[in-house]
Image (cartoon, rainbow, N blue to C red; front, side):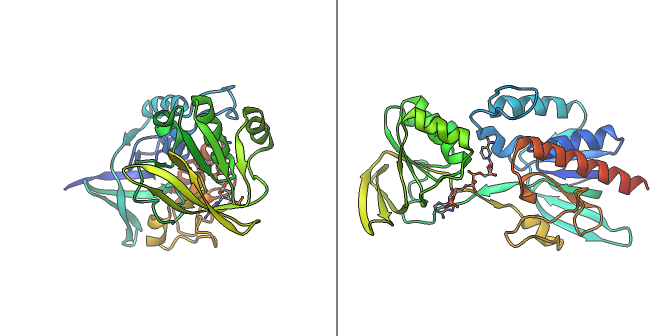
Length: 307
Ligand code: NAP
């Protein structure tokens, strides 16, 4: 364990929000560090195509992340594969101490860009067949299901994008949704229709079955009040996200009723010199919004620290 030096600003999480906060923090002259438990980009890495980020008509999520990372690294140190597990505020100066498995970091201000984690179905077989037919990422695992039959669960943008990606790979895709209406953007729904993806409406996954790998899904048809078994090779779960708020709760940062961090317009939380940006604040979960919030958070930190 090492004791690290004292920073002005530490950004936790290196998705689009965190990387942008890092750039703005460093450019304003703050001694800044960005720490990321995984690799840069977070869930943006899984976006098959990003076509609503100005300046790029259409770009793969990973490619966009790579460009952002390159630019961020020009200004600020990014520590990847290092998870902040503890955050504590102490002393008259209210210094913040961040602990990771590798050491500790002191800082005057923190931007929480911890994002979200994938929601699980919570049905029998989901954990058991993870990596053996159950997946949460079409771009990561879709290739293994080429020419095979897959079910995509969910009705939001992620599910529809996942279904389109899998269809394009040559999978036989069925979208299974719990209601009779999708919440995905209209243009994605139109693409889904054009691609010929079959939709099972008003349906709920009851169980995922298999042997060495997934073989079927037990579905409950709410409208007809019947249960049936559908033969499939893969189940892609896209039923939304939950806020990764564990660090926020350690220092009593206020959350909304769904667990997302509450901020003011300048990304300040209720805790002095603690800011939040990106998906962890809920709202419009788009890369462009995350970047904007990251920029605002770092600018607020600069203003508060130099006042
Ligand atoms: P989402 O919009 O929250 O959609 C989740 C879907 O899963 C909903 O259709 C929901 O059904 C369903 N669902 C939730 N819990 C379920 C459960 N327990 N069992 C079965 N189904 C369940 O999540 P998302 O698609 O991951 O998108 C998250 C955010 O990222 C959204 O704001 C989205 O706009 C954004 N996003 C944007 C893009 C883009 O390219 N612009 C791409 C991906 C994501 P109901 O509809 O009945 O609630």
